[in-house]
Image 1 (cartoon, rainbow, N blue to C red):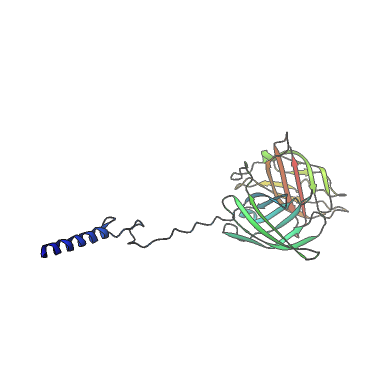
Image 2 (cartoon, rainbow, N blue to C red):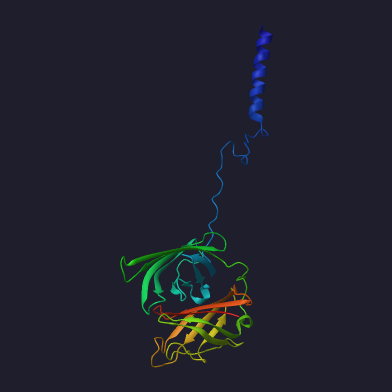
Length: 279
């Protein structure tokens, strides 16, 4: 009887030690030798708001957003083709290179008027090559507020992770110029191989100075910085002012065309001019 009792006790002890010893005798439960403590997975690293060109469809209309490189002062430009002529948004962007960014003083230039309205904007990355944003605008009609949200992505087939080349954009362009109070469907401009820009007249007598209007290619990404210096004239809403903005190329959606050029430039107070042409 004593022998049988000892045999049973030994069997129980052996079984217990076998259970404890599973996993190499260290108490390892498959979580890196933590002795049974479950370690939760690390949270995913958030993607960051990065300079670039982003495209979306908002309310059934094309929307383009551009964040300029830090070397250019990190500006935000937006174009919403709510009609044939786009609404223009602009402002200094704070927080680029982090998980969220904002424009505390957003300028909103409507395509149907020459007035500049104000607002704010907040943006975050929705994933690699993506940008989401919420624009909150002050309007002149009830309810005196307007909200616009977008989720945009880098255009398919467009490589912006390379230095811009003036040779890609040089030559003549004919397209639609919009300037708030009106538009010109057959506006012409020419870009020299050195980046000088010459353009036709719009409005009554608005014209940029050929010697002081230039395009500067970015060395960080495939966009160009635009400077337009307007001549002093009699009936031009932009007379004597300097506008700054961006120019970029995309693949043309028009049959028989290969390139689409889009640019936007604004004054310090937010009045803007935009241009779109295919060739």
